[in-house]
Image 1 (spheres, rainbow over the protein chains, first blue to last red):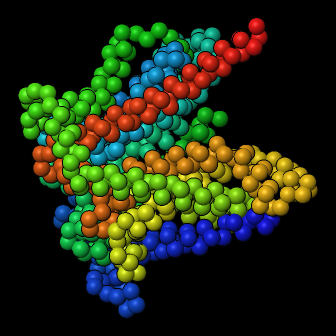
Image 2: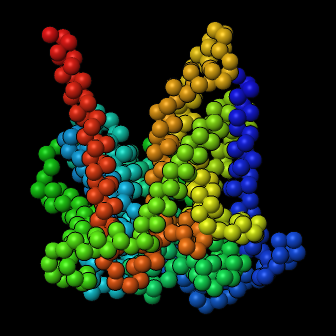
Length: 261
Length: 269
């Protein structure tokens, strides 16, 4: 049986080439000057200095973070009640509702986002609001599904017990249901916030090109202007911010679980 | 928790569902519009569907999408399964390391992974095109296959494979006849995830493809800059296909279950 372990070796090689190498390339490009060869590169911090000393770039980064933050908040605000209503339906109706929420997720993201252009033509929204609509449309299903999963795992006996011990509906919700559903909210936040920060086709398709987020900057530097070193530096800055927020989320998640025990 | 859904809850649910479905219904409706307008419905026509099927770019985008998804699914399912089996028999250190590295493309934003691939291919002077796109798809699909096969291997009884060897199977036979059938559900779900990930991918494809090779997502991204109702027809067709597939996937098991119950009844009589 031990001989089977050799079956993993080819993938280890592939993984080094196709996952680790590309990431190293990105870091290498971010720390080197433009136009150098793979063999004769020159290290620099210029790309990062350029980003933070600029007046526009940090504000774009800030705008992306703010947008992802508000999108996540709105998704919780809409998603939590929806999931709560679903979780209290008859089991058959729950299954239908979950299917209805999942179905649009199977449609190609670009098609789904594009679909809003027609409808948004009827309302006089600013480009910022149009981007919010697209963001919430794309990410809300994840939030609903995550919260629904954690709500439906709650043992109904706990709610009965809470009522028996004299708590009314509001108190039961605040002290039993809400804390027990927090892990779902936390994983919902990870699924919404992270992709929202880096999103670039939603602002492009719905914001009419006037609403620039950090993802659009990266795309522009790689596809239009071809300054890959600076583009890599921007990506690295974004990746690091996302890593930090992941770490914070994980801490919160653990905190939520510990609070339950 | 179960309780009768109150009227204000029904209204709220209806609003959320309307939010999800209105844009889709709108696109489907306007795919039958007789004029180019996206805001006024002037009459019924099938011209955008005809134009779509006559459009070489759209047809080639559909072809590339399907071909890429089929190759990526096929390769990543085989490599992912083989790797998962190997890892399940490997030392813990190797297993943990591979899992950590596999996490990178799953946790990183797509655009970062995509740029990594692009820099990697171009620095090696590999011309980007269909091949590089397929390679990238295979690379981001394998971790998902491993992730869905691994849990099945963990619950496997190691004695069964040992027994097969004791009874005279070669290791390969033991693998084929004993291990594979038991982890089949994991392999199938891994393949399904890989297929949908590849089929729907936009960001990684955009950065790893070359001139002249677009998948559906890239085509839509490029085409929406102008008013182009053939996109409505293309979108509508995607909606039809997904709806039919999902209905079949959800209804067939239900019918089968019912039939199973009927058969049971018949047998009991």
